[in-house]
Image (cartoon, rainbow, N blue to C red):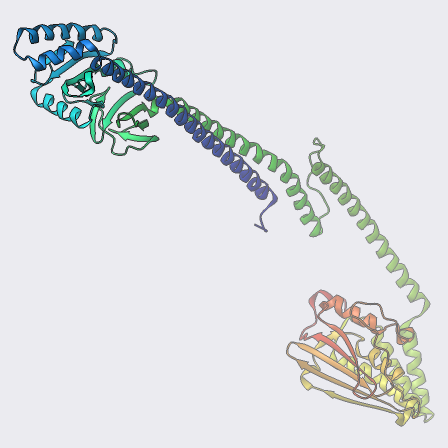
Length: 575
């Protein structure tokens, strides 16, 4: 990502921001949906729990009605007559009175469908609807259940009719508290009137109700609704026949029955799903719009930068002429930067052209002034005449000195930037000859040069100024003796020239690229710093002059150059 363009980085940043914001927004919607579901579950649970409590309270009222019937003195007296005098007129009259009495109790509660008393002889005395629907098998079972409760009531249902529940309890003689058994009371109620959940009243969400005892269904508002495999107190979402239902279920302590309420999940959350789909579509649309705007924004920022980069590359190649100016209409920072760069480029182009012409004119003037001041050929010819005159008069040393000086002057006016090592050593030989005549036996000069290096090329006037520095600083103050050695060898891909003296040594203050003053430059015009700069300008900072102290005294000056078999092409024409 480091090498990406700015427009790609900007677009990636905007894309990440859009995706992050969309993800957070969608997460918020999901959390809101879950919170809404929890609220619906809690509200539905509370509502259905109150509804179930009301149904249980209704069952308690029916049980209170059963207590009123079994404790009624008339009912007690009639049942006792029927027990004491079965198959008599008194028993028949008591049965009729009992039926009329039961009819009176039946009319006190609209949910009571029938009131039935099973006497000790097995006869049924009933009032209400479906009074005779209890078969012989259930009569005996109800009697046994009532007998097991020892006077308490028990609720049963679903045996005769899924729409009818029965509360069953024993009727015992209250007079004299002998508690002899007089019969069994069975009160039937219509489930639809008690539950308020018949097939005609399902509510706003088509809700359904199921009443179960254990694994047996006692009542259901939808006969096709199966008993759920999982039934726990609380609320949950169950799947029945491929449809999801919100299920709230409670097991009430009074009857032990489980009341299960069902609401179709889609009916409750269909509008929530629709809202989620709308929000999803809106987020996608906003993401596309934001990405498009982000792309436009990133391009508006990067296009001026790309144009500026193109112009900088063109200027770097030396092309200062602008093909067309930047659009001057916009006033943002990048456009201003482009226009200012165009102005700067135009000004630089004009200054470079102006300065180039001035420099050429200045060099030509200096050259003409130098030629008019000193004619090198005249000096060389004069020195040659002195050489022959000295030789004619028998002054051999003067003749050799003048001859060496003339050769050095001739080499100086050739203006060659690169020479072979052989030519450089010849120039150095003339200089050493002059100095040996001056110092006589006090100057000791020796060389160790590899033969394969003589035809290699190097910049002109490299060795002689270094030897001149050694001669100036390498003379022993006590003896006046100076020993100088020159070693030339190749090391891998480098040509190394080492000049060493054994004198007191020069101060090693030369640092690569730093300006170092040395007295030799005052005399030759070419100091060590100048040589170092020339080498590094030609070949880079990996090459140049290295200086160090000798093992005992003196200095070691090492010149490191690349191996040049041929003269560099770009400068060959100047030789």
